[in-house]
Length: 84
Figure 1 (cartoon, rainbow, N blue to C red):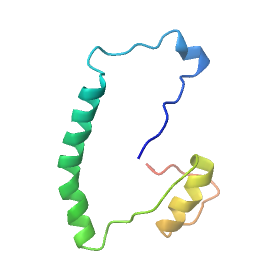
Figure 2 (cartoon, rainbow, N blue to C red):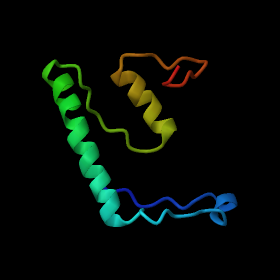
Figure 3 (cartoon, rainbow, N blue to C red):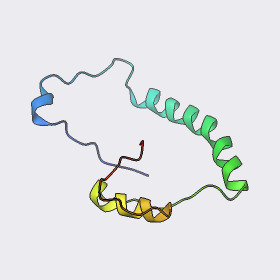
């Protein structure tokens, strides 16, 4: 999966800093560790039929209704966040 980098908002561009350890190799290693640690959790829920997999292309306006549909939830008028 690949997503092109998003430019920072104009008001933030002058304040943007990069950590010295944010190199491609360090990020790849972080992703390898993340994959190794999350794969057992995914496998656990997949084996019990509890893991939902679906695509959410586009931004929040496009993705939110699809997510609610996949979770068998209705799109509530008060637009509660997923964290609520």
